[in-house]
Amino acid sequence: MVTIDDIRAAATRIRAFVVRTPLLPALWADAERPLWIKPESLQSIGAFKVRGAFNAIGNLDESVRTRGVVAYSSGNHAQAVAYAAAVYGIPAHIVMPKETPAVKVDATRDHGAEVVLCEAGQRERVAAEVVEETGGVLVPPFDHPDIIAGQGTIGLEIAEDMPSVENVLVPVSGGGLASGVGSAVKALCPQARVFGVEPELAADTAEGLEKGRRVDWSIEDRNRTIADGLRSQPSELTFAHLQQVLDGVITVSDSEIRDAVRELALKAHLVSEPSGAVALAAYRQGRTPPGRTVMVLSGGNIEPRALIDILG
Amino acid sequence: MVTIDDIRAAATRIRAFVVRTPLLPALWADAERPLWIKPESLQSIGAFKVRGAFNAIGNLDESVRTRGVVAYSSGNHAQAVAYAAAVYGIPAHIVMPKETPAVKVDATRDHGAEVVLCEAGQRERVAAEVVEETGGVLVPPFDHPDIIAGQGTIGLEIAEDMPSVENVLVPVSGGGLASGVGSAVKALCPQARVFGVEPELAADTAEGLEKGRRVDWSIEDRNRTIADGLRSQPSELTFAHLQQVLDGVITVSDSEIRDAVRELALKAHLVSEPSGAVALAAYRQGRTPPGRTVMVLSGGNIEPRALIDILG
Image (tube, rainbow over all chains, first blue to last red; front, side, top):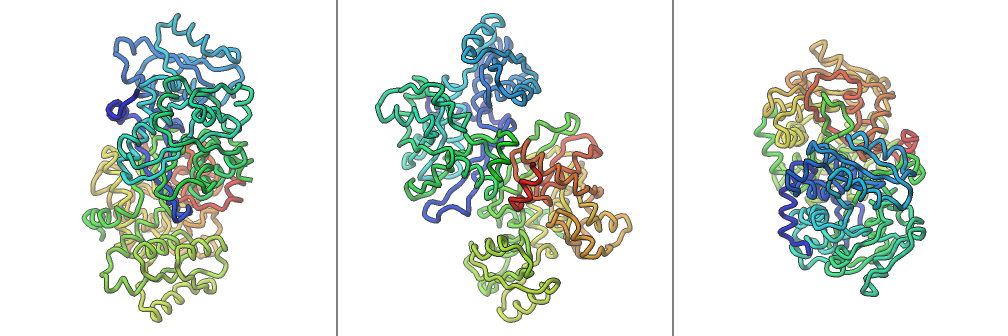
């Protein structure tokens, strides 16, 4: 299991490369549940994923690192690994499904990565082939202690900036972010409750934690939600962390997610992607306990048309 | 003239009440002019004005402060003074023109301030009457050393976070922000150039600095620009600072301002008001010198319809 020492080491390793995001007070929130936003949408690639990517790549032996890295992702992890590899001056191969929007493929190439397009559902297999061919190291999106520790630096910063925090709301998908944030917060602020947040339409973790074991939702089911960054499921490693550090999982509807995106833009002046706004959607349900609450806004990479549609 | 010591004292005075905003790297900017954004839109009321308001109110003798404060503003200064007064637990009277949008009047009242509506062009006279009646202290929007020093804390933070900064771009209207930022940057980073940015349609400071004296543009002329927070003109005090600290003023068209608002939303994930985006509009003209560039994004309080219109 990832420890607070791992997370502190990650913080030192990534400090020069990531934005230390502030806690932003939301004056428009409920008086008895004062709210602060941790805006990871302000990282250079628009999402928290740079933290795990820089920690994983930074923690490689230099002789290994110079062979380059490989990742599979259609989303923010692709850009995070591509960007971190560029900063380290090493090659990156990113495997993306053919149906990935061109804007995301281009953004990944703009960081200097080589994009390998593959058939839907084949990306893990193709990534393994690329590892075999290039000798590069696979940087997984969440199923690795270095990724969990890197994302955990968000929790470390929350604990440093607000030791008296009482509730933390964090999105759950593959579980790297929630595992890391929860591990840091529980270690440093044992009084705090940590709630994961999931779309109702991809609520495998809510069901799994209730049953005490991982459950499998079909990818067709999970693909229904507007929150396209929250369609993964925990691994054994992340699920074990979530069982240990989460006080519960709150599920939110797609309609609630849209309202949260709108509120973040108009009241907090922050552009969020649907996946990034779920913690506010959970807060707005009004059922979290009273007390000082921090929500993690995990990313801001939304398509312009989707943003206009939600604001209109 | 406001000194770096005044600005350091202001920083200490307001530390507990304002967000220490980070410098956000803009990876999408020109390689030879790397760009960082100082996002003051993330202050609790959505604009930098809280810095000056907290410094001015915090620097009053307590016996004076308890009598309350008075301000005139239809914009961000109104909310800043109302919010700072609420935090200090003192009464606030805010004089606003009758034509102020209801949303801004309501936001000011939500902080507990008493709003006094007045005829257009009468707000300074009415504010003086309210001072007479209530014994409160007038907190001017820019024409005061404590306001300049408070806004100057932005420049202090830029210098702390990036001592090697080479260009700073900052909006100019009444000149409190540019005076303060310029004073701090010039004191701590003498190698840096500081450029004011104005709408072409309200470019009295560009003209005035060229002529070496303040010039007066009619309010009808200045009201033409979409940048409704940049329609004021410097006072003698701020103009004297601007003459000393600015290396030039760049003017931008309303069309360029709209493009900048759009780019900030879609690439930096930051919602800005037109006035808040002018520094990016200036940067996008491509005529500032090479080198590490910081732009001040001064505020994010844009009407939802205007934001949708600009994004669409």
